[in-house]
Length: 242
Image (cartoon, rainbow, N blue to C red; front, top):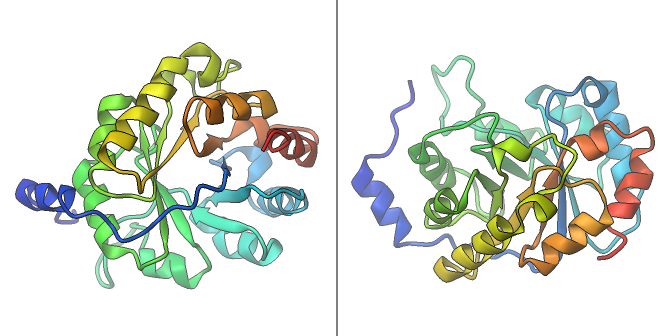
């Protein structure tokens, strides 16, 4: 097991923010997860479809470690993140996902602490200290309290996603808009340097517009794109109001 930070070192990090700065450009992050329609060759096709849409928004695809290199090659103009990384160095770490290898294979960022792959806050803190300057880290939170704790560590983005709404048919912006606006306010109270995303049930341009209106920088979504018959059309609609 990887040795994680002691609590006093986490508190030290909470007082020293990262030197990273996020740009207020709207961002759409599409998480491919491990959907049958979004792995292997399908992941490459989805990345090309996303990349084909003309928009001023920052477009990102988060992929499985298995698909990282092939997706980067398939869509060289698209920003590609990992879905998860571990704070490990070179050596005896069988089965862990090494940040330096991800960078070498073309990743420019990562999700961490997604509802489907939760980690201890020490894991997030250690990862933030290990990744290189300019490598984007988006820490996922289930609620406002967790968003506060993650923001204090200084990631580039915090994404709030109520677990009960993930993969559902109703966007968080409709089902629970107060958690979106509340998270945005909580994050901004702690740091003006951390961007805010929201996810869970986001499907269309109206959901994205509502997210921005509620104070976010953008959205994190999955099935709305990965299960679509025409992903490029869905992406075009998602960014239509940006």
